[in-house]
Amino acid sequence: MKTSWFCRIILFTVLVFLVGPSFILFVASLSEKTLSFPPQGFTFKWYTKAFSIRMFKDAFVTSLLIALTSTFTGVLFGIPASYAISRFPFRKKELLKLAFLSPAVVPHLVIGYAILRFLIARLNIPVLFGLYLGHTLIVFPYIIRVTVASLSNLDSSIDEAAISLGAPYRTVLLRIILPNIRTGVLAAFILGFVTSFNNVPVSLFLTGPGVTVLPLQMMSYVEYYYDPTVAALSSVLVTFAIGVVQAAERTLGLSKYF
Amino acid sequence: MFVDSFRKGQTWGLDNYIATFTNPVFRVALLRTVKVGAIVTVLALLLSYPASIALVRSQRKSFYMSLIIFPLMINAVARTYAWLVIMGRYGLVNRLLASLGLSPLQILYTEPAIVIGLLQLFLPFSILSIVSALENMPPDVEEAARSLGANGWRAFLHVVFPLTREGMIFGGSIVFTGCITAYVTPAMLGGPRVLTLSTLLYSRVMTLFRWEEGTVIAMVMLVLVFFVHRTLRGRARAGVTV
Image (cartoon, rainbow over all chains, first blue to last red; front, side, top):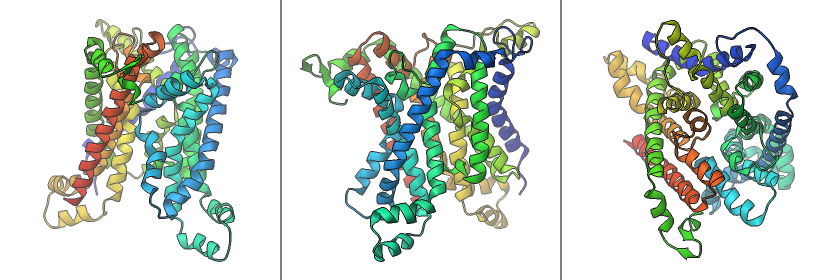
């Protein structure tokens, strides 16, 4: 069926609106002196600067560490939980589902604030651990959603057959379920990692002296300096994102999980 | 947190709420947050619907899809920073205006700046949910309506639109709740003078250490989000049975 010109023009406008700013930012990152578009001069020096600034390096390492550990924890607990949610009928099921999915409903800013107010301020939990806790909490819903979706595509008679042949649950989970849902698990891991790595609202309240994450470090840098360093750093992140999206959309069909 | 919001020192009561709600700064921020959220949601749905229709029918669908999800992979700071380059005092827009001989505009640190930033941030979500609604629709209903004599516009209005209403409501609720709890955009594009609930919460807690007020603001946000989820989800479900 023919699509009207009106719809196509809107689609085109939307795509330009979504992608255009990143492009402009990339061009501006090549500017010689201050951040401007069209750029003045041409240089790559802001890229070398972005990679040589110590606070960006530290923040990047923290972000990476938190994103990896929290996503790993999320997957570790998320897979058995998803299995229970999708396979067993039990009374407290809705409650369990609610508990795992509620961080998707509760604003992230509120989660960060609550952890600061009631865990860090009261119990003196170290900052890094609070950060890890908060991020683990927010990656759960994504991981559960993706693994439940891939479990429901898997015929339940396969694992029932294994159980009826005497395999213990651990074996079923490790040798029957996991190999069959591995693309789902990979998608869950990518989604969880991206969520944690890019998160600002939770980290906002949970970063302490000397401990900060990359997005927040970028934000505070922007407040004090008006040079294209952050533009250069953003362009690097954009390049990574394009790579991840291309790979993930081709192999996993990531867009259906958002 | 709910319990704690009623406590002030050793006494309990509604004091914290009364103190917060009578504060004009809070009231302005609350109204602004809801207003900005509503504007962004309406704009997002108005843009997403035609765009999704064109997208679903396009032959280069997967390419367009990846263009739409790739912004979701980048942190909000990087995405919002681009708007500083465009809307800043010496940014792209003001340079264009200057070259046309017009006086520069103050766009940054205003409400419209926040609206634009949030719209760019949350458009992918409304597009994705409308696209999935359009794809879940049985493919031949529209053709059936047309073969029964409905013209294109009528087929859309009476068949396609009602069938995808749930997707719109779902997408709209994601956009709205995302907007009212967003921090980065109002912080970077709104500045310290155009406060929203989230930036107000941050400044009250982290610079003034007014915990009681912070807890009340967090509760207000939580209630707003729950309320939106409940009513909209309820309506979405009712829409299916009708």
